[in-house]
Picture 1 (cartoon, one colour):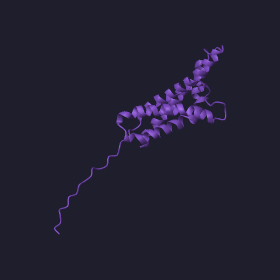
Picture 2: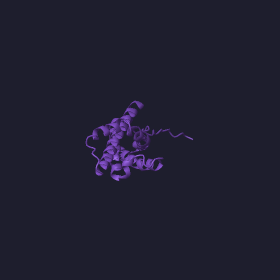
Picture 3: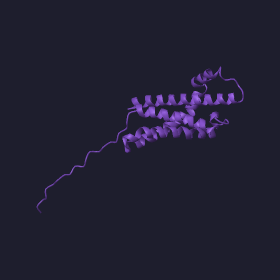
Picture 4: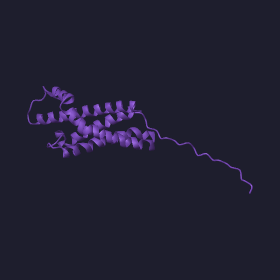
Length: 164
C-alpha cells in the first residue's frame, strides 16, 4: 500500500520545493536588479545554490511538506466518496491552496521577519502555489487510486410461512 504513496509523495515534494526555490530566487534577483545590482552573471549560480542548499530545506520542511501532507490526506479521505473524474482537479486545488495558505501562516509564525521574504509580493506566493498545483497533479497521476469499498448487496432471505 505505501509502496506507491510514498514515492509519489516524495516526487511531488521535491518538485514543489524546487519550483518554489526557483521562484523565490528569481524574485529576489529581480528585486536586486531593480535597485541597480548586476545579477546577470550570478543568476544561475544563485538559483542552483538555493535549490541544492539554502532555501530547499527551509521551504521544504516548514512549508511544503506539512502543507502537502495535510492537503493529500484531506483529499484521500474525500476521494472514495467522489467521482473518479474529480481526483486530479481536487488534488491540484488542494495542493495549490495548501501552499498559498501555508506561506503567510509560516511567515507570521516565523521568529525572523519573513521566512520567505520574496512573498512580500503576492505574485511570488501565487507562483510558489502554482508549484503546489503542478506537484499535486503529479502526485494524483502517480499515487494509487483510493476506491470506494462497495459492500455486498443485501440478500433477501425468504422463509416460508409457518403454519400456526
